Image 1 (cartoon, rainbow, N blue to C red):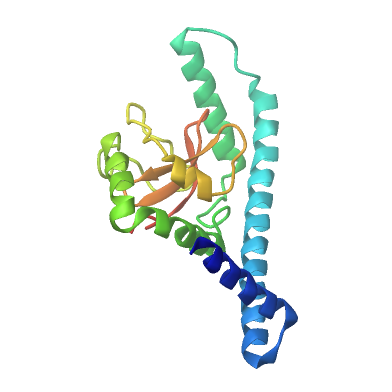
Image 2 (image 1 turned 90 degrees about the vertical axis):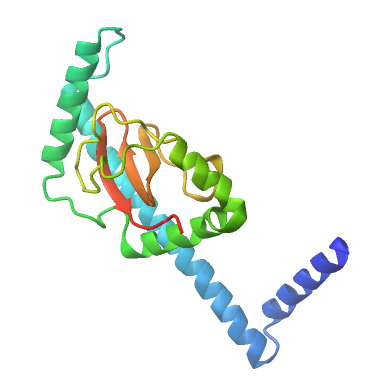
Length: 197
């Protein structure tokens, strides 16, 4: 049965590639258009993340690398300095600078199958296990992630469908929304509303 399904699947794509008839030709154009639009959105997202990482590297050069220490006061002071400089360098940053409207639409589309229905019920329950208090985390660009609030675990299925991030940046789902967090500075860089159905 599985071989029959795969054979049928490949037969459809063979027809698309040959472009036979108006129906398959238009289907091929639609498939190509969807793939190209998705690829372009992902490339643009990666470029925006890379631009932020260039800024971040400059800030780290100014603040200095993290010292190996167990003194919480030293760790906290560096975090505050890092956050302050990032905010200053991104003073004009706004919602959509990293998560453009196209990126937000794509991320919702990628996550919806994983988070809806019965299969997503367990994931949604896990998101609530270590969630911060409702309204505790501000959904604002350049906002500080509140001290003392837990960082919700980002499920592996979420990480598997979203683009990989450079070290230091993390996706976190807060309630129904996704944030992009600079973890060492605890600064929210951008957000996507309503990724959880």
